[in-house]
Every structure is written in structure tokens, then in C-alpha cells.
Length: 202
Image 1: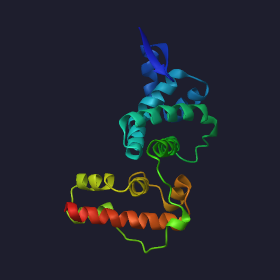
Image 2: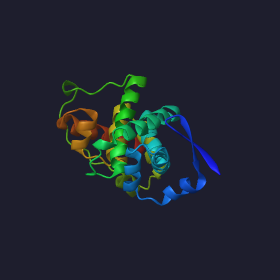
Image 3: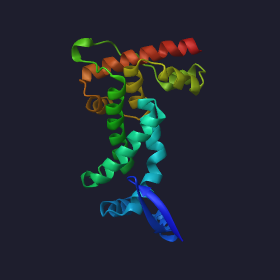
């Protein structure tokens, strides 16, 4: 029995047996097949990562349709440049970086996002506010997410990348193309804004 699948918006027919066999493959053998142009292997990789990558994108672009577009484009881009994947990080981390970069490009284009230049910021002391602080104050996680999503776009984006996606300051500087000093200041102000919103929510 043949199964129709679509990758890169083109349909292909494969046997159900072959389709199911790839579900048992580890990611590295699958990536080798993807580099060889195996469309079914690409579909398997897509199926494994698409939900997580969609959520990553949606947290940035804040729109399901845009997140879907970004995710599709990111997978296509990833398959096209698999030869640049060196394995120094996991494939999921490498793919997520592509998704985040594409999401930021999309978000800036759609919302006219304004980057924060050096002369717009002055150094401020860090305000230590973390999700654990919210927990200690008995604030439900949903309140934390709601407060995060209600922040100014720049604050929401940098805290999402820092707290949820786990990027450190150096990585944030690279992703957002800002200086280290600006990164620290922006996070400090974002944390302070989040803390105030959490106090209101409590």
C-alpha cells in the first residue's frame, strides 16, 4: 500500500512499510539520508521536530499562521544546508537557532520591530527576577506566561529567548545583534517590567 507525503510542497509516494521503518532510526542516520535527498527521511525529521519548532516560532511572532510559515521555511533551509551542520550542538539546537533567526526576521518585517541601539540604553543594575521567584510568591505559571506575553515586544522577545529557550547573554548578543552591555541592560529592564506585572497579577 502506498502512502502519499508532501515535503517542500511536493507529493511523493512511498510504501507504508518503508515509511514506518524510519521511525526507528536515530537522528544521525536520518540526517545522512536527508543529505542524500531522501524525501521520506526529511518527512520523518520534520515530524519529530515540527511541533517544538512551531512553538518556538509562535512565542516570537505571536501568530499561528506566521509561525507555520517560518517553521516550513526553516525546515527547507535546514535541509538545504545540512552540510554546514558540524554536530558541535544537537541537531535540535541547530534547527532551533535557524527557526529563531527566521522568526525574528519575520517579526521585524511584520511588526516593524525597532532594535535597541547602543545610544538608547544606559547601564543599569541587574534586577534578579526569575520564574522561581514567581513560584515562591505562589503565582500560577499561567500568570507568568500571561505577564511575559503582555510585555513590550523587545522585553518579551529577549526574556523568551533567555528564560524559555535557554540562551545565555553572549548568544543573545549574537542573535539580537546588540552589545553585551545593551543585552544586560535590556534584560534588567525586562525583568523589572515582568516583576511589576507579576505583582499586579498576585
